[in-house]
Amino acid sequence: MNSLENNTIVLERKGPSLWITINREDKRNALNAEVLDGIRQAVIGAARDPDIRVLVLTGQGHKAFCAGADLKGGAAVFATERDDTSTDFGRLAREFRHIGIPSIARINGDCVAGGMALMSLCDLAVATEAARFGLPEAKVGVYPMQVMVYLRKLLLPRQVNELVLTGELISALKAQTMGLVNRVVAQQQLDGEVDRLIEQILALSPAALKKGQDAIHAMEGMSFEEALAFAESQIALMSTSGHAQEGMAAFNEKRPPQWAQRVKP
Image (cartoon, rainbow, N blue to C red; front, side, top):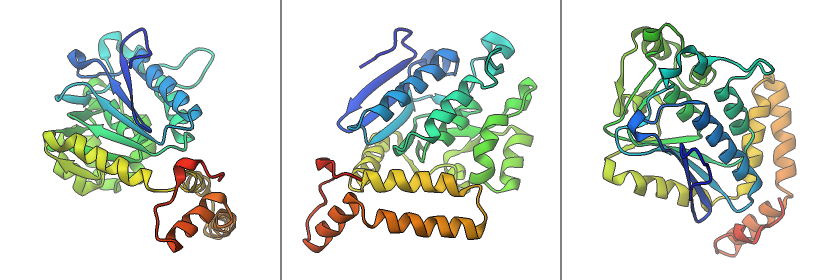
């Protein structure tokens, strides 16, 4: 199913999951304004659809998940709008942060520069063993500013320095060792591994996952005492929710919980 006239994004519903595919295989799935806006619109639509429980973000083909920004337009790809201080990626990142739906980056090939930023938006990442990762932005005179918002939390400082100061592409296995990706598999096993993750996510309470993710974001700017007090208040509230009641009843009755019945959170 493709809902975008510019054909840069393909959307496909697979049960309760929405797959978002960058459809620019001939350009190594490079990012431009249309791609970023297409993904953003898909994310907004998913947030409004109560039947979507998981997002999968990937690229077309086997060579590249995303090779970064399409530089044919020059520096314009990094610019902000006159009436808005946000970039196209910044607007997408803000939508992603508050969607409340677990997301998986399906890394089908090289994940470079802006591709690393896209991957970092997602909660989980599964990569093919042939994929390579890197931040070579300084080769064209810029710095991976926006991806640093995420990588400074995902990686150790010297790991970030190595990626940025050398521009070197690293293997999928090294990326996994560093903590960039969760799982590395052969190309033919990629979809099966993504499907396994989706199945595991669907077994959990969607309300619990959303509230938990919201709480993690809220605690980022808190002190230890503030975060602990906030967490204590949240677990007390969640323990009386409809999903908690259903989950505990299912545990005691030795049956699967019925989240599909849309128990009120």
